[in-house]
Length: 485
RNA sequence: GGCGUGGUACCCAAAUGGCUAAGGGGAUGGUCUGCAAAACCAUUAUCUAUCGGUUCAAUUCCGAUCCACGCCUCCA
Image (cartoon, rainbow, N blue to C red):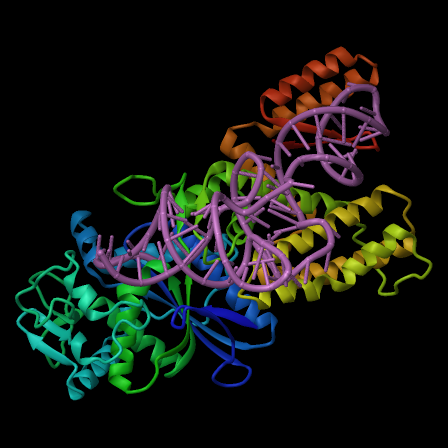
């Protein structure tokens, strides 16, 4: 399998450091506010990566951190007159709920910065020992110029960075590029003891210290949003490699950004879309399908229309699923197949390998979805024509097999059609304020009208329902199903 | 200014040095249906931003141009 490594800027063959095992660390959140679609995208992208690696048979140890001490947390806590620890705890819980709601698998380890102060202090001490750190009145800093190779991840060189006008000049620092390892305590702020006086850790040091602690050094994969490449990940490398004298991470993976209506999502524009807000309006499978329908490295544009279109794709899948008999499957492929069966059979047999081929090529999820939908069309085509019990049974069992693989890789298409429709209906009626009881009552009225062949009345009721956004489907057995358009 | 990414049909989005340029959504016509819905069939890119080059052959490789976007400051 191949993955794109930001460090080499090319797609590389993935070879773990220890055969069969993968250590993976992804930057989580700073717990000071509700999480937004950007967090959702990063989380889903790396969730897919972990799921796929496990699908391939790797034993994956997956860690994702929580930054629970930071300027932003302190500022917000002060502003809202809350305890900083309680605030962080609150948003960590919210994040965990959001992630579960999106169908992400919980990381094996979720280390928190404040639980690892001694590890960070030890790392900083090593940097002192190696002459890469120095102390000033405001704290301890990393001496960027003394670390050979600074800029290798982001492709920047020190001179370019130096000449950039946006670097703030701090009199205390020996060089404007130097960054804080330990911040000296300010009155009223949380503080810990250290060999350099009371204070708190800088932002970057936690990831270097915690990832190395749980995954060793070097470890296989480090992921995060593309915006973290510089300075965060660059600094992580400098600290970890500076302290250890060995390589930090073999493969660096970065997910692309999400825009909102073609605009960058930012607090100043005021277009932050939180995960919980989205989850009220859309089913998680639609959100996941949307996020996975383009390459994890490309920027994507969020619009409500885009999610609605993704939802139609998911609908299409479950419409097909509902047509397959759930009971009575067979592993025996019948012989004597017609042309349509033969074609379908061929596709069913090759689907898994085609999906794997796409995913092996830098996690090409969109290609993998294409395989599934091609199969959906062929399956529908078969079911529309002459069917045979034997073939249908075999078809069902092949789909079960495929679906279980697909679900384990992407975390979608794993519900039953009934579950899916119930969920979708509940979200749609709630978000649009439609009363299910009223809908049922109107459907009953229409049924009576149809029975007495009063089609004018039946259509009038139908129109009334359509105005509510309700779409009807008359089943052959005389019952009527409905869903929200 | 430095570094980087991308421009594929009405929209989203894969792929590829030559074979019908996936898939989803939309649109139009048809089959089915009391009417619909769903599903299926047909049509919807003689062509992959533009201009050059390499090649027997390029959308795919190289160069230039134009356009869009990201990072260089906290940020998924």
